[in-house]
Figure 1 (cartoon, rainbow, N blue to C red):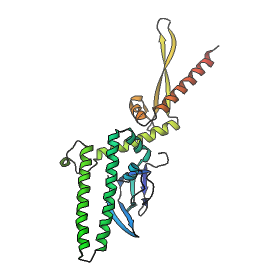
Figure 2: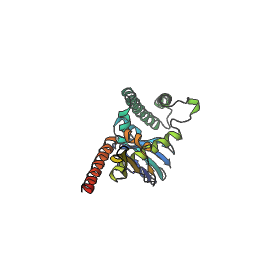
Figure 3: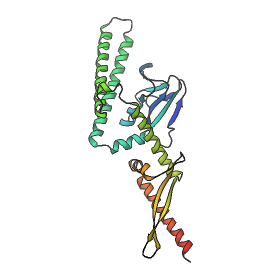
Figure 4: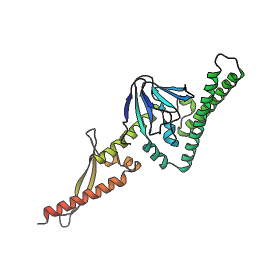
Length: 269
């Protein structure tokens, strides 16, 4: 996760990834245009042209198989990366049944892509010919597109409360913005551990009977890169969801013990 630039711009004709590459992240297109294509016996077959708000590269990070196509920036394109380890963690935290159906959906999606490639190849070979093969390819294309649309409709109904008539796309702008925010905040949390942005403040515990300080309550705060000091209520849920809670807990215990040791040395006389 640390090796990926979350906000990246690809120049015109620059490849975002190539067919056969391992999947290290998916991408949300912020601006620009991306051509998705695969190679078939030395010929490029374009399967999609994506623009702002579209997602690409998601299959390889879900089913852990090599990239099934290449993605090229048609114009200068800005993307937000969603890393493999982030997605893997969320999948592992999900219900086993949900994971099973997700893997199944990806397998069928890849199968449709393969069939679509065969159809495109048949149409390309049949150009200029009124052949039965070209006719069969056209019918197969209609069949594949229909199956793809039906699968997308089912996935949409499974992940959103809105009906198909209420939504024109699989992912709403609000969903994409929330995803980008969560990914960015998790990255900042991991960096906060290495950059020592967390601080402990000690609130004295006073015995009113003796009027003596008998202990301290350790209060953790995050000096956020925005300049704001955040209370645990602003970040503790994400720390737990990201798996950083143990690391943060060990750090708090170590810091508190060091503080106690310093107090002992300073006031032992």
